[in-house]
Length: 96
Image 1 (spheres, rainbow, N blue to C red):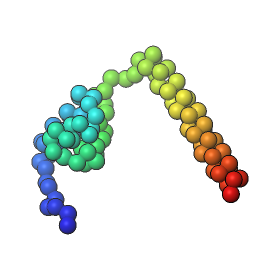
Image 2 (image 1 turned 30 degrees about the vertical axis):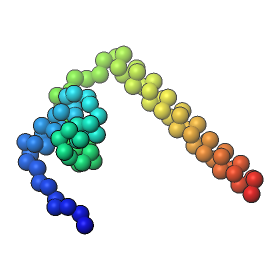
Image 3 (image 1 turned 180 degrees about the horizontal axis):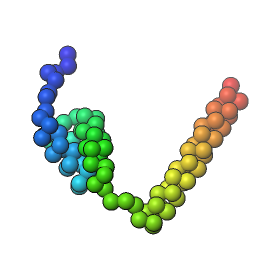
Image 4 (image 1 turned 90 degrees about the vertical axis):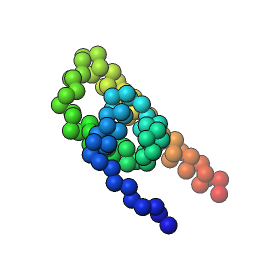
């Protein structure tokens, strides 16, 4: 039987989300420290980032280049993973 649903004040949520965003610590670590489920804290952090998005400084040219490089690498790795998954399924079916 699930426990009683806990209600948190907006100030507590804001402070918890700020801990995650400002310290760049993993959500799971902060959640464990303050006694909140990590998924819940993830929602709070996402909402905090959306509310404070305009306060973030724009990316520099080198940061944009790095981001573009990482996005390209991510696309390539996803394609390789898909290919390997299909190849593994093909060879597994071939041996049956």
